[in-house]
Image (cartoon, rainbow, N blue to C red):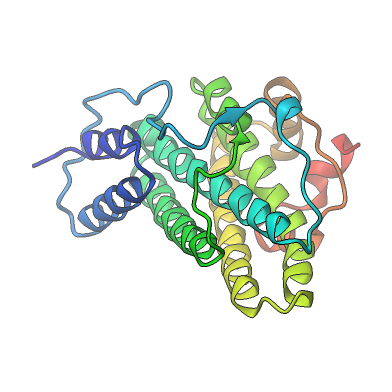
Length: 263
């Protein structure tokens, strides 16, 4: 019987995007069926395997966005979203594989569910790009999305504070405006995809918040101040408004966490 750690590591080290999606879905199905041994017998890689394209650029070298209504602008938008979801597969897999042995089965199940969602999101967005005559990898993409994972690889509380509760929570803030622009442009299919992603991301942030609260309880620390301490120490960016307070609250992330450190 293959171990859960080996199955996760294999998916992380699958570079081709569609193959990574298939590997992720297969391991999640095997986990749900009880076909993977509970053994963390191999370490997770410092960095997942990625395809040769897209070219990964630092934020300062990313090309400026085209006008939202142009064909190139639409392709750039969907490509950017596809890249975010592609990296999110690896973020969820690494969370489960790196910290699952210490955090337990519920933690592993929660983040494998997230990984399966992210794989599904990526597949939807990749097909959307293809319907526009493009494909994932056709444009350069942001190189910094994995940095937060690497910086918190030794601390599960810090990883939970930064990845689900800052980066994914930011998606809750910005997706509604993108959704409205897509809907206004008459793209009902695109609006449906973004609605599904937004609904799922609330659950993802909720999973991260739930397990962070457990970490805070174990450390005998007040959750909000502990989160603020970890974000200040490990997150290079800023926590900035506007905030989708209702979606954040639905995920268990109240303003008491982020209002005090927002810029």
